[in-house]
Image (cartoon, rainbow, N blue to C red; front, side, top):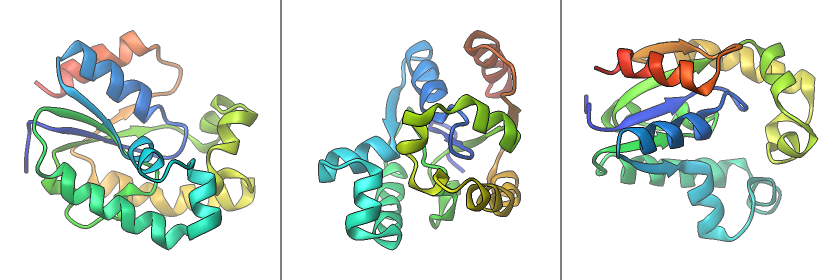
Length: 164
C-alpha cells in the first residue's frame, strides 16, 4: 500500500472534498477531486453526465482516474461516494473513511447540494444505497474518522494524529 497519497472515501455529503482540500493545504500536498476532474473533462456537472451518458459511463471515468491516481505522489484525494467500486483502490494510497449517519448527512445537504448528487434525489433509494455501501467503506478503509458534529479544525487534528 502506498502511504504518500491519502484518499478520502465516504457517502455523499460526508465532506470528502472539504477535508481533503484542507489537509492538502495544511500538509503541502496536491489536492485532487475525482468528481471535479470528471466534470472538468466533460464540461458538465455530474447530474448532466448521469443523464446524458449514464452511471456506467461515469463509473468507467472513475476507474480511469483511479488508475491515474495510483501514479500520483503526495496527494490528498477526494473521491466520489461510489469510488469504492474501483479496482485496486489500495494502490492509490492510505484510505480514510469519513463516517456519519445517513440522517446527519441528509441534514448537512441543502437543496443545491442534493441537486448536484443524482443518486441522492430519491431519499429512500439514497438511504438504501448508503446501507449497501457502509460495509465496503469500512472494509476499504485504513482508518475510520467519525465526522459528526466536529469542526474542520478538530477533524484536522484527528487526521494529523491518525496519519503519523
